[in-house]
Image (tube, rainbow, N blue to C red):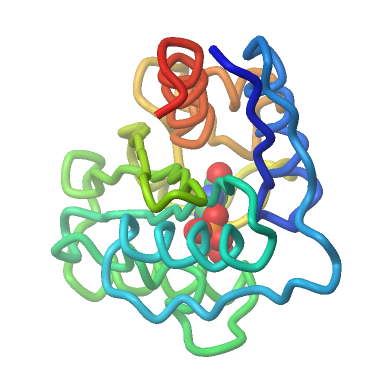
Length: 203
Ligand code: IMP
């Protein structure tokens, strides 16, 4: 592919490092962090795709360079797909990760979803690239699993202590090494798909 410089929207150090690790393997691609004077964008849309687009387009406009942004949500079947796009503020504006985890466990108890098969969920991530000429491309990554009855493990962040991915031994993401989590995670899958897409054709 022709050389491409891509600005990464995420200011979260761990997420930016994971993204750089995966996209760093694409030949001809140079990654740069979001300039400190470009502010974060408020996520005012109602889908992961639209929020990721909003963030990528704003950063592309501000820098004049192609930009990549991602948005993630946890979709729980027993809660009709909630919290989804509202995952960061499930327990209210400014909620901590622990608040959101406690709210999730309480909500599943409230709706009587006690058995593992009633606690099915998936993380879904959208990675979106906006180019200065107005073209765009996006990909999705998802991982299915079960919400555990209680919080387990000290690693990760967000809902990791209560999400046990399918195909493992019942451990939550918070009980796995970073490498194990990234190998199956929604964000890992989305950015590996994006790396393939960018390696095939830049847009
Ligand atoms: P964001 O779009 O990546 O900022 O994610 C929105 C919210 O989803 C975060 O505030 C977390 O609560 C949750 N989340 C995103 N990614 C993960 C993950 O890998 N593990 C656990 N929770 C996550």
